[in-house]
Image (tube, rainbow, N blue to C red; front, side):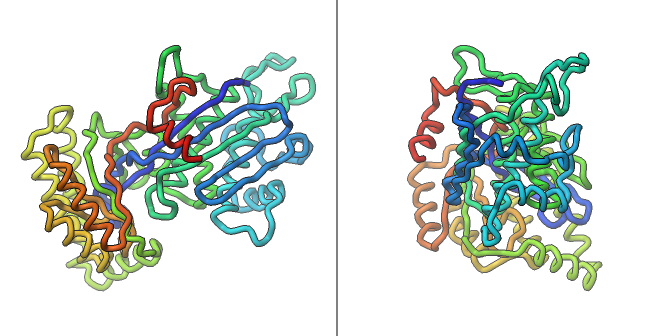
Length: 415
């Protein structure tokens, strides 16, 4: 097991185009949001595994020797055991969670414990029988679970549809796989930041998806894929593929702070489709066309985007927002967001399920900073939270503990 401190980060995500239409087999474009979750893992020898999540007030610790003695055969031998409801119930017993534990806290702890026990039991070794990468070492080649101190904190607001749980799972998977030497630490001397190989990222993504399954039950896999790979992804009917070299677009991300129920909104669109098939089906087809046109434009923008390409992106944003309103997933708060940004010459749309939640605003190159600040102030005055950030950000990354960039250092200082 590695002994050095590991610092890992992973991005959140937003849906650029394709909300709701994707439920009906159409294309959705998901992009990595450069608001990130950070994880610091420090091996120690105090016989404890500590988990701290300051954003949601979690501080939990387990005795490693106790965990070692517990029957965890339900995790089975082999790769990434599917976390069934029965497995999750057994994890609750292992975790020792009280009955009144909040749902958010409980799921975060269970996802960690699942990944910790599953990955750290499966350490690379050669046993007396000569089998490499033994799934669960026993007898002469048994290895103890590691003592670790893990802190995870995030720039992402929780429960806003921005992939915060996926970024959490990705960070955990990457750090645990690295410390247990299932994948190598990609940092070289002098590196400030680096990323894993394609093969290692695939393993990180596989384990992160299992962590997401503990939290969400039956996720699509899009959120953890975006957080792992970064950039932009196309999703359609369960198939995920990366867009090649998408530009890192500057945006405003606005959280209206209006709660919404994704399941109810999805059901509402389905009911509207059944009631008005000749009206709603063409809307979904049109949203699909918007996603495809956006994909085409992003592919052409590359490293030298032209002003007219930004104009096309703005038109697509406006059209999609009108379509989403026609589907019934708009909200007065989102209308207000669009009106405020339109008054400043900017174009916005909802991202995610709608009915409140978040919206994105495209910032064209050359926009003067005072105008951006004035827009942010106007949105804040509406009672919204607003961030200036970018999409198309790098995926999960590892940072040097001795040569921190200012952003990671600022995050550490905030703990």
